[in-house]
Image (cartoon, rainbow, N blue to C red; front, side, top):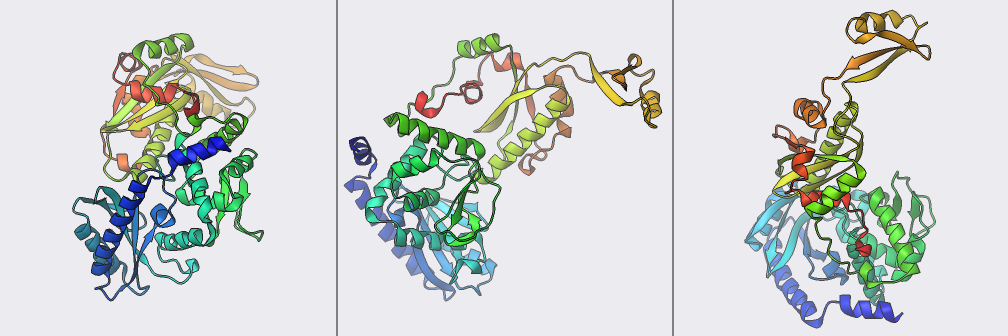
Length: 441
C-alpha cells in the first residue's frame, strides 16, 4: 500500500545515520575485541540486538556481548567484562540483569557491554543473557532482507501506541518479539490482521509441536528455547491496547498510530472540572526516588501501590484507579470514590445459632454504637472507625502497607485532595485521569 510505503520512507534510517552507526560499531567492536581477546577466558566478542539485525528505528543503542568459556568463574567473568566496559566507555554506569553489565556512551551512541557465557545450545544456559546471541542468529537466519522495513513499521506502530519495550517501565513488546512476529506472519499488515483476532492466552509458535504453558495474555514460544515465553513481560493492559489498536488501524489507517501528538498536561481548571463533575477524590503518596535501575524500581513501585491500595480498601475507601510517575521523587496517585467515610461501619458476625456467637457478643457488647442486633440471622454490630478520612488513614496506617523492598525505610508524604488539585501535580494527574488512547489525541 502507498500509505505504508510512505511511512517506510519516513521511518527507515537515512544513509548518513546508517553510515554513522556502521563506522561507530566497527570502531567500538575493534576496541573491545583487542582488549577482550587478550584474556584466555574470552572466546568471542559479538554484536547483537537491532544494530546487528539492521532492524533499528531512529538512533539505536549498540549492544556488544563478550562471550566467556563456560568454565570461567562468575567473579572472573564480571571482573574482566566490567573492566573492559569501564575502560571503553569513559562515562558509564553499572547496571544489573542476572549479573552486572556496563551501560554508557561511545561516539554519542548509547552502548551496553554485556559479559556472558559461550554455550553450544540454549539448553546449557548458565545465565539468562546467554540466550541473546542465539536470538540474534535466529533473526539473521530467518528474517528476509525485505522484511526489515516491515519490522521497522511494526516497531514504530508499537512506539506510537506506547507499547514498545519489554522493560518494567513499559511492560510492552520487545524488539525480538517484534522481529519474530514479522518472521511468523511475513508482513506488518498480516501481523495486525492476526493480532486483531487475538484473545487472552493466544499462543503463537514457529512450529506445531508441543510446548510449555504460560499464564500470560500472549504466549510466543521462543524458537531458540521452547521453555521460554518471549512475551512474558507483556501486561494485560498493553496486550489489550495492541489488539484494539490493530482493529482500529485496519478499519481506518492513520499516521497517528505511528506518530501521535504529544499529550499535554491537564490544566488546573480541567482537573477541578473533572472532580466537580464526578464527585471523586484523589490522594497522592510521595517519596524520594529509590536508588537502583528502572527495571527494579518500577516493579517495586507497583507492589508498594498495591499495598497502599489494600490499606485504603480495608478502611472502606474504594480505589477506582491508580497511577504513578517516577522522577526526582515517586508520586503514587489514587482515585477514590470518596475521601471521607461515616463514623461507624457495619460489622457482620456469625449466625446466632453458631457456637461461637457468644464470643462475638462478648467482644462487642458495650464497645459498639448501641447493642449488637440480629439481621438476616446473624449478629451485627456498628463499630466506630479509627479513621474517617483517607489522608488521616494513610498518615497513621502507612506502616501496615506491604511495600516494595526499594521503599523500605523511606519517608512517605501524603498529599490530600485539596492540596493536590491546587497545583503542582498536573503530570501524574493527567496520566491518571486522561484516558484517551495515544492515536486519538
